[in-house]
Image 1 (cartoon, rainbow, N blue to C red):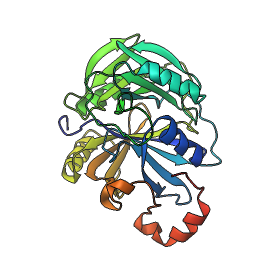
Image 2: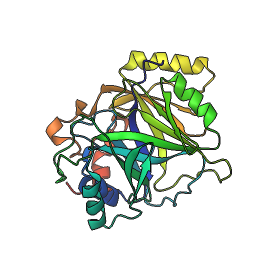
Image 3: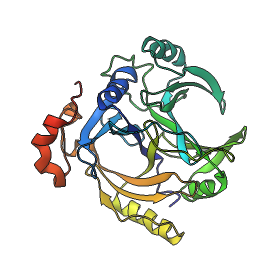
Image 4: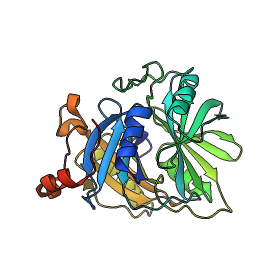
Length: 310
């Protein structure tokens, strides 16, 4: 399994307002909406995907917007901060751009020797931009953000846990190794990953457990190449005593899920088949695409889901 995981595939969070979330990601952060579909288990709720031009694994942020969702409660047992990669020298641009768009919580800090710009998302999410040298991933060019400053994809995710040791051991089994420690936090990197190959573990031993709500990360997904690789990972996890779901077809990837020792929901997702399986690349994210079991709801959902720009 150590060589099978390739880094982060996608990260899925909870939101309150679909249109506001869509505008924040497409117009403020400059990512592309690559899929407009619905929650498999609650088809009256969108599942929205934002990424680079084609939705490459390691670039994909997704949202379930529930209009009546409560506010989140930060605490132990969650992915606290999602960190995006931008080129070195880009933070000055982003500082002005976020201020011009009245984004809250903007502050600079150095973490593991990297300059980062922290800010709050439209749902009270915790985000940061990190200046990363040598990230050659091609950004999305369609949102008016200069290409020389545009987001390349995920850089890392920070988890806040009561005890980092069991999750550290799990990540080591998944091919991550410790690459640094700072102020009690442990940085783990997957060598030869997909660019989104760092997880940072922070200890919060005395605080309350996290409570999911708007702005919470629902789950973090790790990438494997294909179904065969996914089954080998599943077999290894089950062999270690994890309770892993059967394979679930999510149309754009195959998924398995399990709860990590620190309480964070992990997914293992395939890179195949990708987001162009039901739309051509030039029109990704334009039309409402439904899972097969909900196809009969197409007209109803198009009339009742909140409209999105673009």
